[in-house]
Image 1 (cartoon, rainbow, N blue to C red):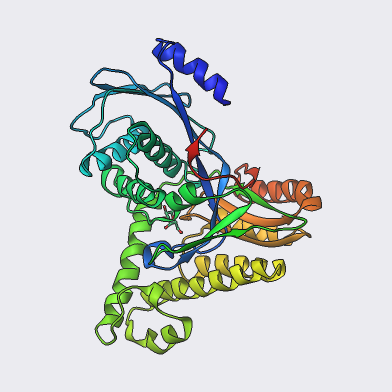
Image 2 (cartoon, protein in one colour):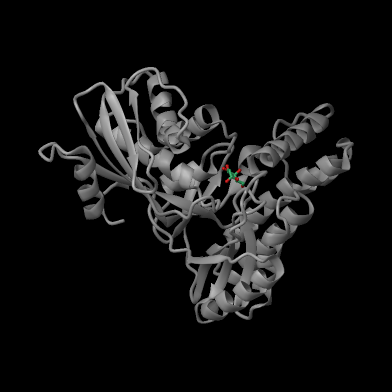
Amino acid sequence: MDVQSLHEKFFELYTKKDQVCRTFFAPGRVNLIGEHTDYNGGYVFPCALQYGTYLAVRLNGSDQINFATTNFDQRCSVPAEGFARQDKKWVNYPLGVMDQLVKRGFQMKGMDLLFSGDVPNAAGLSSSASIEMVTAVAMNALYNMQLNMIDLIKIGQKAENEFVGVNCGIMDQFASGMGKTDHAVYLDCATLDYEQVPLVLGEYKIVISNTNKRRGLTDSKYNERRSECESSVESIARTEPVSFLGELTFSRFLDLQHLIPDETVRRRAHHVVSENQRVLDAVKALKESDLALFGEMMNASHDSLRDDYEVTGIELDTLVDEARKVEGVMGSRMTGAGFGGCTVSLVHKDAIDRFITEVGSAYHAKTGLKPDFYLGEVGDGAKEV
Ligand code: GLA
């Protein structure tokens, strides 16, 4: 939806054309490499997409906050004080952000809000982080809060952890807040030091393939992996002073891994520590224009997520296997939490049509599902438009 149509819809819903609204945007993200490392204090390398969520908003002089979206027919009004979780699930993302702001001492007033998102739904491309970040940036501007982007990112993550009830790391909100056109964000999740690295891909493009698999078990499995990582740290910490897996270099981990008695837990930790090293290697490769090495790292990342971390599944594995058969593909891996959602592949521009045809039909034949494909155009982080 373009901004003009959003405004037309806004004034149709909320009338009072003399009271102007302001408009904000925050993107979804695709992670290039560094999966399940963020909540282990490791490195990630995501970029912001051009897909995202728009928000038109104004103060309305009442004590009611009105929520609407162009995406589905679900409106909701809540009093501007004392927020409680809503049945209309999507409202909990913006409400969670407002709740965090109130907890930091800011007061909310009556508002009219209209959201409009074009991130493919339930694809694991962080539509929820984009709703949180567009709300955070909008509230910051509307109430002149003077919070910086890092504060807003932390607020977005806390909203998701505490109000929505999903125990995510900081990567999605960070990419949505700090993304930059034609750059990827190299982030150390332990310190929040980051660098926006130019994404110079030459003749290659980022292609996102959606499994279109319903992601039923994601949340429970995600939490299970988190506790497995915590348990690996506890085992090591009985002997060595270690507080999170991201602290360990790969060779140090090899020296210490015998301290983890459970074989499965050891493999989970092996994924995290090896993935961390792959992010370092991949970022270096990109800076040196070595796309072949970057692609190799992507492939190794998927294999580790499949074998050690076990968060892929037949759909993601099939998409990746088929992608790697296509000539002109540098690398292919799952992206996001896993179990469904999307893969990300680095594909030569002349091979994209063939990629879509060949991967699409082989995937359909093997799984009975029809995939969707999107070009991963890299856009800017959250802002007023
Ligand atoms: C989800 C979470 C992120 C991150 C990824 C896995 O997208 O929201 O914080 O943990 O999974 O890398």
